[in-house]
View (cartoon, rainbow, N blue to C red):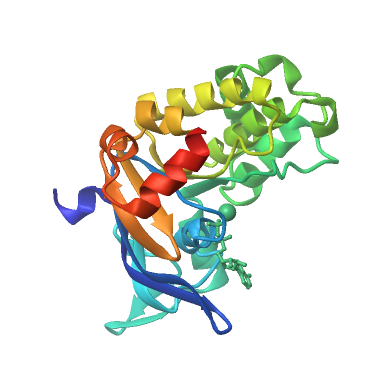
Amino acid sequence: MTSSELVVQACQVHKSFGAVEVLKGVDLSVPRGGVTGIIGPSGSGKTTFLRCMNRLEEVDSGYILVNGEPMGVTVRNGRPVQATDAQLAKARENVGMVFQSFNLFPHMTVLENLILAPMKVRKESRSDAVEHARELLDWVGLGDRTGSYPSQLSGGQQQRIAIARALAMRPTLMLFDEPTSALDPELVGDVLDVMRKLADGGMTMVVVTHEIGFVREVADDLVFMDGGVIVEEGDPREVTRNPQHERTRRFLHRVLA
Ligand code: ADP
Ligand code: MG
């Protein structure tokens, strides 16, 4: 596989907060259309790694390329220089992120939540943005909720709206950080169904989740992180059925219990 077919290439990523080293040399490649699941105990660095991917955090050393380009860095006179805020915003358009807490704008309707960034950042006309938003809302099964406010929706509905809002920017990579962890159990399925549909449609995805069944079924690759390193990586069915490391075994035992 040539590197241009890799949407994410992370190489020896190190990241510390103060004296605490949170990522201790993480490598990851995600091919176009690939779905990578990341599992691991709380505090292992999963969220930090995702945040480094869209440059909400800067890495200390190593690098992450998205679509072959270093996010937040451009080349001037043959030397890497820090991108301007505008260049960084442009690069981030390619990367959608969905969080555990849905993070919708509470004072805006569903439709307004979806059209804001496409109009502001992508300079889409209002009518184009509205048309695309309606398509996406139909696609997540909430075409009848355009005029609702987030507080009028269930957590599962809000999360599906959050996914639609991320997709409104036409990203080439979607990052999910425990998207179903804050949901009541009966609402988890609808959100996973939307994510499954997205994967089936060929979206490149990195999904941090404790939903082992989803990962087994949907992911092409599974990463187990612990203590800021990738302990084990491979075919999701293999890793979950026949983990090679004691730490992976212990974690799976706890999650599946
Ligand atoms: P996970 O998502 O796997 O639970 P995180 O990436 O959130 O792990 O956190 C890994 C470690 O980094 C934790 O010990 C956490 O306290 C620490 N950490 C995360 N973000 C910050 C921050 N902004 N400042 C200081 N420490 C942080
Ligand atoms: Mg986390």
